[in-house]
Length: 224
Image (spheres, rainbow, N blue to C red):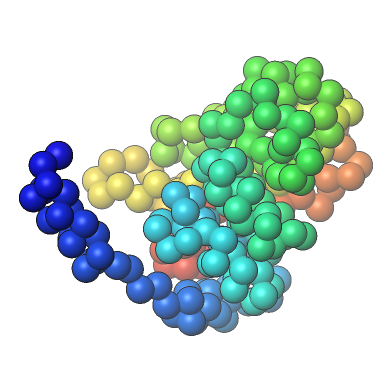
């Protein structure tokens, strides 16, 4: 880079900045809490450094508000959040490699399972791990198909070092494609009815959480 370009780049960098209103984020959280009520758990998705807002700073204010958990896509974001929210659950979305099982256990993070093969890969690490099962209700991205979930849960219930904490699904509302939010919610209700039989959950997970990801869809359809 020439001296002129370097000077321009430096000037541009010094004249651009982001101002993040943490009070606005708190306001939004309180609005969602007011809408869903105290009985519904809220996991704040803070992936990609809280979408550029600063995962650690946002985590700190939301933890102070009593948020029930966080969800992230990378171990880096999870570790930053853990320093500011030492006791709040943190869910890792699909993608982290089981080679990091020891660090995941040490930081008390919750993994995502989408298949029996993923479960088996984490199980052989021998680390005691908490997990959520992700269900694909029509988004066609990641997650076990509804027909696969019961087998996955039964396998997990028989795996001593894996503790299933809940099930979640990412709602898809792409215009003109795929099922509607109500149709996906109906699929989830049918699934929950089918897995309520003995043997799907271990004794410690009888009160597992059920979570839907996509705030706008959940608020609009009022499925809680």
